[in-house]
Image: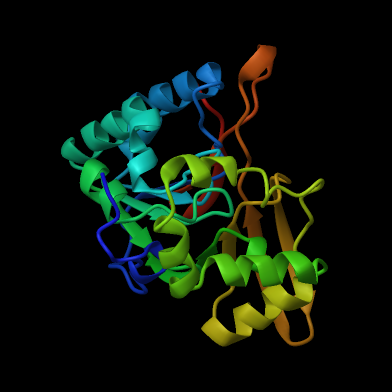
Length: 252
């Protein structure tokens, strides 16, 4: 895969059809040196995810994606996603802070579609806002400026014009010492803007269901779990809509 001139920031859908039977995951941080987490993901695709119509990945599927020419490092993961797609499932992927350079090459290899952050979606009678979540971590203005810079089409075009080995060496520069939590007032602002009562996001690695009352807004915020199955750990899961209710799901 090579850079075809269309940068990732310009490759995302801002609107998608209503979701019929979705499952949501985020923050898997898949990498070659995390074999147990990769195996958990492959098992998830074959077992848990197989009963859902749509797989929605809300950022940081990969630990680091340096551009679509980085794809050979993740060939087994791309093949698994493509097989899942060919079995009749739709796949939607949102950029995270670790894989914001996923582009058209990735979508061509997997059948996935890239979606904007944030994006409103309809699930049954529910109007929901999806996000990776880092846009609301506004207590770190330096990070927010860094995030905005790296998601600029001109900056992405410049980055992808560099040699792959230089981009890989650039890794770690967006990693912060501590992942900050979201600022609820900023989430509430998005709630009012998109006229929703339900938020689903990842990024913070603090899985939970929160009900917030903020000024004139009351809304539910669901935070997806991160995944880590290395060195005997067993952390991960998903969120689904079943029988009209949202549920946290545990991996088999």
